[in-house]
Image 1: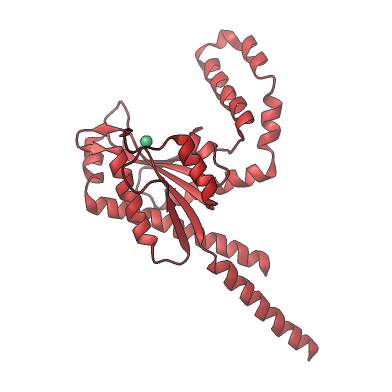
Image 2: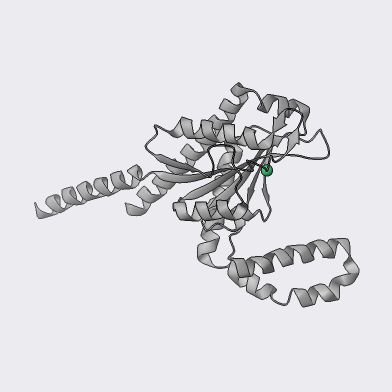
Length: 258
Ligand SMILES: [Zn+2]
């Protein structure tokens, strides 16, 4: 009887805990890139700053009545924000994840498709080492004769490697990668996952990705992205990716508690 009572109590508590876990909304910080005096990429009628704002507002509207989400936007109108402003806003918002939204440009007009970027999250001191490391790698490719100098510059590479091994940061990186993969799944093809030290994804302490929705330099893709129907579809794909991510998080937490 006591055992039955304990089991029943335990099931009741587990159910309550699971309900609490599942009901905790995922706080998403959405950063529509550029704005105000910074128009971003501009080609013909396409202006990156207004395109990404329009899609971000549609995403907010789409998830507005969904209790599983709370969305905070870095801007909801055409205003100028520095990258530091955006990073500070994201950190102060106490959001769970960050999605920075952009549109791409390339010298080759044929290039098209979405690109999803994620990056390791390193604090500022080590970040410079990391960036220096990247630069040195680049120099190595461009000027192989400078290998000796590169060795000197990379004397702290061990520090960088030990930071990369830090479990907390690894977790953030893994979650950012998982987010990237989900967005890749829902996004229109061709789409790819890449890594680059964008400030918005490097300087924030939460899982972060940056999405380049498509290329404004590709006339067909740009024309499509300017259409309301296409913008609604992109917002829907962004929402679907976030819903899937939330479901995975909830399932993970439920499994952990059982
Ligand atoms: Zn941009």
